[in-house]
Each structure stands twice: as C-alpha cells, then as structure tokens.
Length: 235
Image (cartoon, rainbow, N blue to C red; front, top):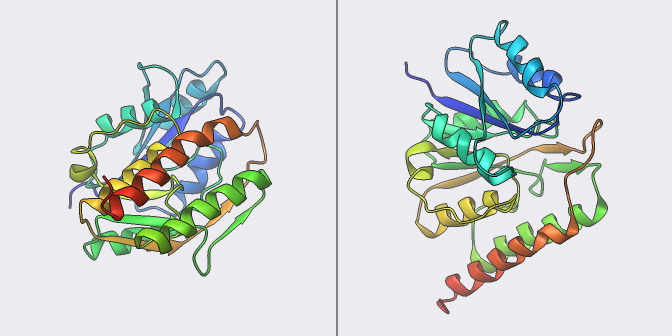
C-alpha cells in the first residue's frame, strides 16, 4: 500500500508546543500509511532542534524549511510541495486540532471524497477557548456560507481539512495568509469535487501567543463576498 496521508505542520517559534503535538498525533495514526512534515517557518527558537531530535524516534517524521517569505500560506505551500501522500492534512503546531478526528476523516477520504472538512460548527463539533471575536467571526462566515451558497460544510475557515493532493496541486492559490484554507475549500466546491464534513473539537492554545489578529480578517471577507457573487452568477 502506498503512502496515503501527508500531515503538514507549519511551525514558527513553537518550541513550547511542537513536541506534544507530534507525540499526540503519533498515538492516533497508522505509521505505515502516513508521513508528518513539519515546515519550519523561519523560527527563531528551538523548534527545529526539537523536531530533528524527534525524527530519530519517529521514522515517518521529517522537517523542511520554508525558504519563501515567512507566513502561514507559504509554509503550507512548502509542505504541499514536499508531500507524497494521496491526501494532505494541515495541522496546527499549537495542538488546537483534535487528533481523534483524523481516523474519521481518513475513512471518508477512502470512501471517495476529495475534501474532508473538520467542522467545529456542525453537530458534535465545538470550539473551546481562543479569542471570542475570532470564534464569532469564523462561526458567522462558516455557517452563513453553508446556507447562502450550499457548500456542504459549516466551517470553511478552518485549516483542519483533508485534501486530495493531485487536485490541491492543480489549484492556482492566491492567498498569502491564514485565509488560504478557506480559498482552497471554496475552489474545491466550485470545481465540483466531493466534499464531506466531520465534527471536530478545536482547543485554544495553552502555551505561546495566539497569532490571530482582527486586521487579518479582510482576506476572509473578500473570499466571502467572492463566493456569494460567484454562486449567484454575478461573476
């Protein structure tokens, strides 16, 4: 059996979290079907040293460097370029994503879905902790798009999604920040690919500083408007 899943972990100055995140993931994965790629996004702490040490313990783990401009989108793209699995799953380095959800996502991918979304806003999902304004914004965007354009997920902004790699690599992605996850999801939808969502719990980070800033929500707003206009044939 070939490599099924590539997990991409963008990491910038995550020395307090990265070890726990990797070790937690290792307990919920089949090592024969997966690889974990940590993308060092210009870290200035010991993130890379910690991962290199863990590579000695976990043969499915490797680290690459984002040689592009620093930022979440470029770190993800670096991971995409290095991935070998049939599917790709970005996971946050701070441990906010629920590893227990991955098995459900894999099962749906094996059923033939092209995109499996971890959803905080469907029945059984949830969001614990984190900035309140972030929670309100992401819930509003995700749930309203579900009703306005008919996309089969209530959590388009979430980065915790499993993508079929050959489709993902065919997209012309323009986002340069966290909104890249929403851009990918919308493009899968408008291109007619099969999408499914499974509930997941998101946890606010316990260590380190949150990278959320209200000023970074404008790209989401632009994608939100673009999706509505495209759905209703104004574009």
